[in-house]
Structures are given as C-alpha cells and as structure tokens.
Length: 300
Image (cartoon, rainbow, N blue to C red; front, side, top):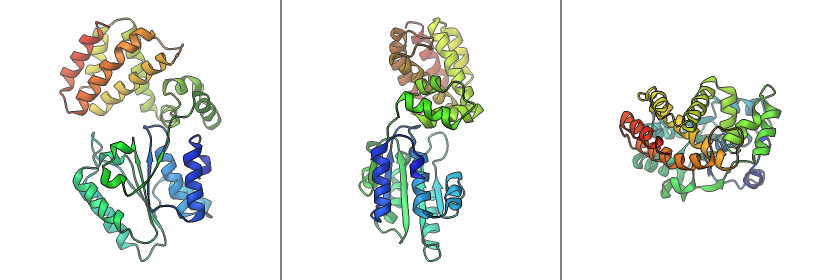
C-alpha cells in the first residue's frame, strides 16, 4: 500500500526498505502538516506490516475497522489524547499479545498528548509486546513531547507540488473539475484537497472562506463579522474557517491569479488571522475574538 502514496519519495522509500528488511523500528513517527498524507501513510504502513500478501485484508485496514489495527484519535475540540484512552490501548494489546501474531496501533496527532497520557504510552513503548508496531502522526517532531519523540524513528512529510496535487486529483477523482484550483489553494496538500472533493461539509467550509476572502477584498468588515458570528458556538468550525482563509491568503502570496485578494491585502490579513487562531486555541471568547478581528480587518 505504501506504493500508492504520492510524493515524499525519500520517506516512503526508507519505510519500504525498513519493512522489507525486517528492520523497521517498533515505534514510527510520521511528521507533517495536516493534509500532507501522514494519516494515509500510517494506514498504508499498517496494512503492509500486517498483511504483506493479503490485499483483501490490507484493504480493510485502509478502510478502518480491522481488528488487528487499533486507531487512536483525540477527543473534543482540542483533540486531546487522554490517559484513559491509552490505558485501553495498553490493555487491549497486552491481552491479545498471545493470540495475535501482529498488531498495529496508529495514534493520530501525537502532539495532543497530555503529560499523563504520554507517560502511560511511554511505559509500553519502552517494552512493547512482540509483534506490535506503533505508528504516530504529528504536525512536527518538535510538537511531540521529547520523551515520546526519543522512542520513535521520525520521518518528515511535506506538501507535494501544485502540479503533482492537481494530477493526483484528476487521476483519482474523475469528476473533479476544480483540481488545479484546490491544489493551488492548499499548496499541494493532497489530503486537504481530497477532503474538499469528497466531503460536502468540508467543501462548504472552504466556500465560506472564499466568501470571507471576497468580503475582505471589498473591505466589508460588517459582512465578515456577520459570517463569523455564525461560528461563535462552534469553535472547530471557526478555526477551520480561519485556517482556510489563511490558505487562501498564502495562495495569493504564492501568485494565485484566480483569487479575489490582492497580495498587499493578503499580507495584511494573514497575521490577523493567526492572532485570532491563537486566541481561539487558548479558549478566548469567540465573540470578542471575532469582533477584534473584524475591527482590524477594516484597517487593512
């Protein structure tokens, strides 16, 4: 399955070589921004490790729900990985160690461990059961607690080129008519672009960000505030809106010609969005954050 990953050839070749030689570490950390394919690569690695000669079983791992592959994600808006979750994982892998030849534990967004859950995982990483592979993903190696990071072999993932991303979308999503536009907006992040093709809700979030970009281009701070007010009680949706607008601004600065903002205005908006994003992540009052953002956008 690793052969289906597009881009990041150095990391993929190293993973395939380690797997084929039987020298793969029992703990692997795949680092890259959301949308760069770390989650997909983690499932590919799990499928190839568990079922190198069984395409049907490997496909089940890719779909999710394979008994031999445990997937762990954080909880709530913060995505925090809690200690009870890790305790359940430890219990399951030790309980099945005598009955399953191989097991894989995929932990998404490992930067979201708290100290207690990280310490709980550390105990099993130091002495894992035979045949258990841990695959962690994270936004960056630096974002992962040092105690966890030091027990893993890390591989870095980056966005592919806009041209590669466009070609991938056109090849794998035959009905996609805006492949080049999505590749441009998300700067070659195939996973994010695919989500906007496959998920109507994700596409609607991008549409909101494009509308907000048009409002910013027109200097219409009032309409911006009205749009943002609809997200006040849904922080994940608010953060996604701001993230997508940051992507739009970054695409403009890279030379995107189909986008409504000028480079000068995009450059002025980006730091305001980043400040608002940090405030929301720090549990700031969404209404006040949005009011402040709209007030500053009026001056850009």
